[in-house]
Image (cartoon, rainbow over all chains, first blue to last red; front, side, top):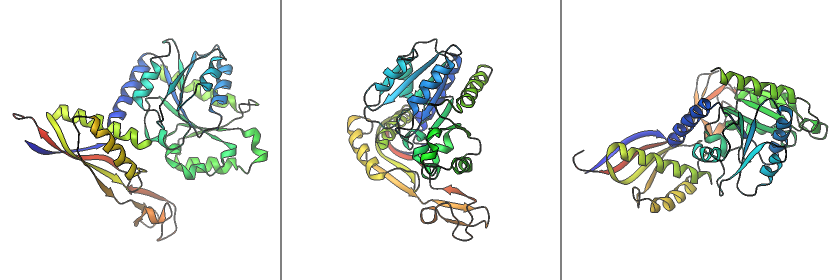
Length: 220
Length: 119
């Protein structure tokens, strides 16, 4: 018998449900997962390195590096004494919940905060829920203050925006107030943290937010 | 590249639907895709045509796409306009206090399915 079945399910429906399950499981295991997204070269690994060093002793941090190829980032993180695992996406431009779950299985269980360093790309990762508790994006000064206009979905999906390389502001036409205003127009709830992972400027504000959100999850 | 991941998720959802409805084979799949959903249709169909051959449930099933035009609403003058032509700025009054009414849909609308007898 042939029949027509009406579905009206969103295409990412199966991923959305996998992500919701993963988020709940991680909360039950007391793991706080942050999905970190940005364009290539914005300073994700440098920011993470600094954050890990600053928070050493306060939280047990692990990093899952997602890349299309190579393991240079994972080696860099491991040299700081934090646990890291390299996930290869085999050409895929984003991580989804299933891939995140598989990657997490390779990290040890006692970690408290895990960063998923997503593929360097401001488009595709915004479309797929990874199961993370918070989504954080990086915009670096050399990329320009017009990025919110070009990649609106990414700015809409994130809980926090870290503006990196602010020590380089004198050399670029980057208007911090304008970038912030554009991000807030897309997402009034987004928290904006201008930082320099190199000089340490602004790092306390970002790390404070991170620890607060982690605390909130513990008591949720 | 993005489209590849999407097709994998579509096929996964179709398997769930098949289990729930006692479906033996799927004859066709119809998607509803908004004009500003960011999906590249040619690539999507290419990926579909590649993957459907690797899966007995959807083998040979054509993918039909229904386009949904994108429409934006202006809260200042309370009129609607075509998003693709004008973006965020209202062509009637010039306001940017606007929001998308429809056009970013991306859903599986329906399937034609061969259902096992007795169900």
